[in-house]
Image (cartoon, rainbow, N blue to C red; front, side):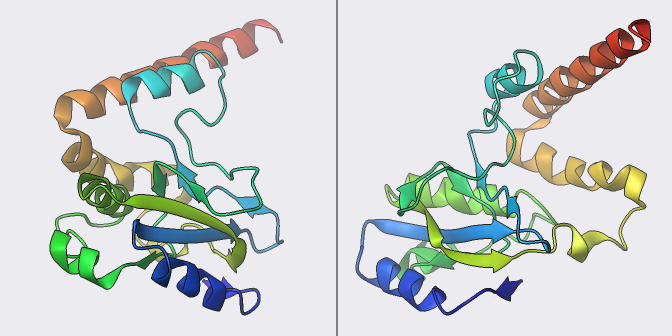
Length: 182
């Protein structure tokens, strides 16, 4: 992560002055300063179907909200977060059962269980080198495989494989139609 400016101070102030906020995250930027998804909608089979079969964007995958003020969201990426210290202690911190990925979704799930808000704070921007921490774990074509253990832990086996089937079958069908149109 790389701070773009000093707006992190404002994000800290926002968290300190809003006791109903459990966790807050900035806007992520790619290295070329284009927006990078840092907010996640509910990770459900229905939302996977909406995005991958019906083409409804931002239903399942990370996205960047088109907002200019702090906005309540379902989950934020764990690449950079601020969390209320008391709430963090209450939920027991990061769940160490997760090895790479889904630990942020679990953290947000626990914050929601406390009845606290998850806030996307777009005025603070950080450059995020997406995937850089895990490049030594798998080659480029197999990066998606490192998500599987944590997805099973987060969703349970049935939901994990249902989501996998929805996404996989959509991609296979699209590939078939692309090949027929050539």
